[in-house]
Image (cartoon, rainbow, N blue to C red; front, side, top):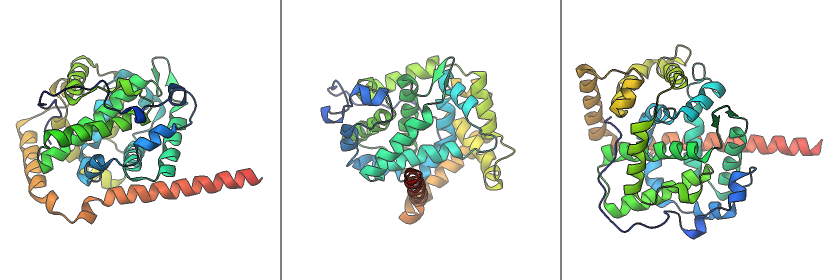
Length: 310
């Protein structure tokens, strides 16, 4: 897959905020506690454009690149390195991230409320000197990587979107950020503003030792399930080519002529075959993670009922 980078955007009138007034959260409910603002749930009711994108299994091909981009932020890297275990459970972050995305796009109102509250609770203990999982600036960057990698992969396979569709999709992706306690006004007000923010981050982020530790655990795991270890060589190739050159080099990932050739073949084969696969295959990961999510929610609710009856 090719490098994730800023895309050309037609000049258009910018709004003050990509999130409409009805989508704004009360600051108290997003910054403190785990209560979910009803306005947020209202704004998540009909995200049609994001549904068309995130349902595609091909987005999973960008999972490693998205993680390496996220941990390029030193605060995110420290939190992940000190509170996660990529070496032994490399699929956990992918599962939690994709469950969150799929639920925000396809879940019921109650499911979205439950998952958002679970994410907030999971983030609560992830803090220490120099990082806090509830820091909105860190979560803004995390959400930005989901948008940049997801839309880039989608357009590589299905072709570029027209300006109207691209802008509407961008507005809907803002809801992922706000669900992670990013204040609405923090999300760049247009795609043009977003790519300016993106380019600035890419030019200024520094790869820390924490980031290198996580990258090594992710890309060279010796403890991952066999099915994961088998595909890691290809994951390293495609991930290397997806990363901006500056970050790629900082991680110590080499882009050679052979690797670029393998990546080009992978991209061309994917473009020629993936769009023609049956929809049930292309959406299988979404169906799997949503089923897993509903099983976990049901199990959690049963446990809470049992505890209340004691």
